[in-house]
Image 1 (cartoon, rainbow, N blue to C red):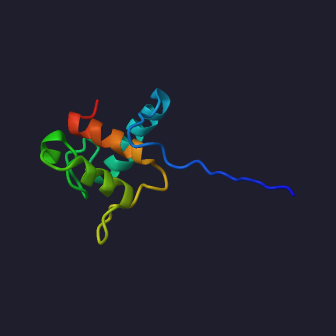
Image 2: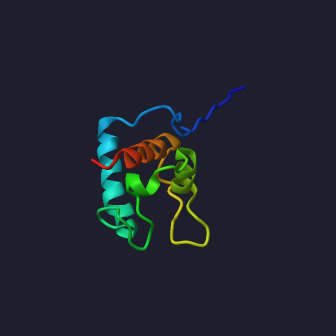
Length: 100
């Protein structure tokens, strides 16, 4: 009897940090893809501003959820097909600190 085990990589742990190459890709994604709606300086446009001042007081978990699941009834799409939970958490962290 032969048994096969197939495993699929799951999302990274929420506390793991993307490697430097992936961080560069994520920064580009934020600037270009997010910036296309939130403004290239992230000061707002079709989407709300994503500046530290605009995000102050918002729960990082709620922001991560918005990135991963989108917002129903708005143009904000879910990014979960393209990002792990750890990557969404990293993006929230850099947005709260101010995009480099």
